Length: 191
Ligand code: 5GP
Image (tube, rainbow, N blue to C red; front, side, top):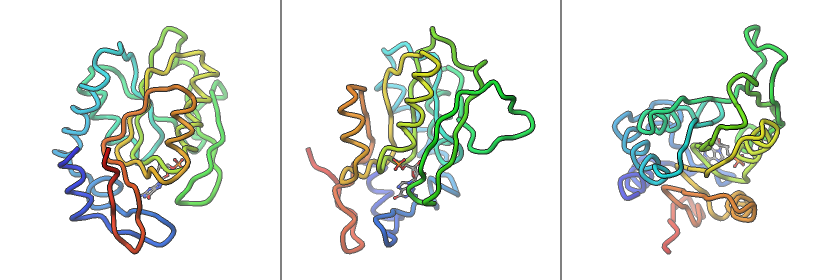
């Protein structure tokens, strides 16, 4: 997606440890026009898949997942990272190691919101080592729902996540694919 690649080139910064900082349009302040176009793009890619729910993990996945759900006219579910008083014990839970925070978190979705007849589309802001997506796939398995695909805003193709999802046979659509962040420079994958 050209618009997204331009935005990454012009406004992204590369931090040590192969981390791309995009908090001025995706992870903290959100560019709502861009997010709307991202939602439109995912909705057109997965428009024929009969998606019944869009699923992501709080918090950075919510903006792109929300706009995708708006364009598909289906509910959005975000897995929660912290147990809250309003979350009951009736949960599907998976453990996820965070690439940027370097800690493990449980992520949970209330059992009431996933039913075996659901066809879910998983959306996330980044794909690095695939831990967040794997956690959601584990929850999907526990809930016996069908996963029609995974949509990623920014894929760091040089890390393990891409291979892990491809090997599982699940459709993967990434809007920007980064080949390298070496020497502080963003290089995109060119097919
Ligand atoms: P994974 O679980 O695939 O290893 O990492 C995905 C999660 O880690 C994303 O949801 C995102 O929040 C975070 N993440 C991974 N790499 C980056 C990065 O380079 N920049 C930012 N801002 N977040 C990242």
